[in-house]
Length: 234
Ligand SMILES: Nc1nc2c(ncn2[C@@H]2O[C@H](COP(=O)(O)OP(=O)(O)O)[C@@H](O)[C@H]2O)c(=O)[nH]1
Ligand SMILES: [Mg+2]
Image (cartoon, rainbow, N blue to C red; front, side, top):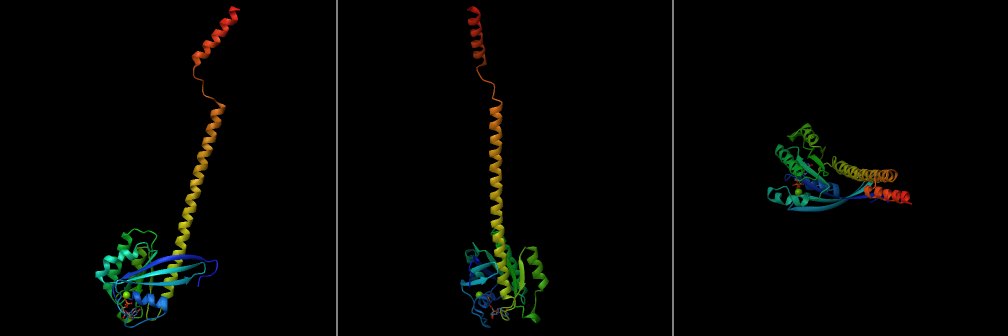
C-alpha cells in the first residue's frame, strides 16, 4: 500500500537472461509469494505488477518477464526500451547461463540508457553442490560494469525481497540525482542571466557617464566660427 504523502515512482522493470535461469520464478516469488518446481516456460513475455513500499517512496513496478529462448531475442528491445531497471539473471549451476548473462549486460549497455538501474542476479543459490559459477566471479563482473549484484533463490525465497528493495532504493536515489541536476542546471542558468544583466547595466552606466564624441564635429566648429564672425562683425 502507498503511504499517504509518500512519493510515488512508477518504474518499468525488465528481466532478461537465459531460459530456465528462474526469471519467472523470481517474479512469481516477489509478486505472489509462490514457487513451482515445474514452472511452465514463458512464451514471448509475461507482464506483472507489484507495489513496494520504501521508507521514503512507494515504487509501482511494471514488470516484463521475457522468454529466454534465442528465437524471441529480436523481441527483447521492445521490453527493455524505456525501462528504468533491468534484472539480468543467471543460474549459479550453469556456466553457460553466466556467459549468456554477460552478453545481455553488453547488449543493455549498447542500447544507451545511462540511467538504467541494472541488477546482476545469481539465482538458484540453493543448488550449492552443483555450483559452477563462484560468487566472486559474478560479483567482480557486476562491479566492473557498475551493477548491483545479489545471489537469490526463488525456491527458498532467499534475497528476493532484498533484490527488489535495492532496485527501488536505486530508482529513488537516481530520481533525486536527476532532480538535483535539473535544479543545479537551473541555478546556473539564472546566475548566467543575472551576470549578463549586470554587465549590460554597467555598460549602460559607462555609456551615460562618458558619451561618445559627437559626430559632425566639422559642422559644429563651422557654427562656432560663424557666430564668432557675426560677433566680430557687429
Ligand atoms: N532449485 C531451484 N530451482 C529454481 C529456482 N528458480 C527457478 N527454478 C526452477 O528452474 C526452472 C526454470 O524456472 P523458470 O522460472 O521457468 O525460468 P525462466 O525460463 O528463466 O523463466 C523451473 O523448474 C523452476 O522450478 C531456484 O532458485 N532454485
Ligand atoms: Mg520464464
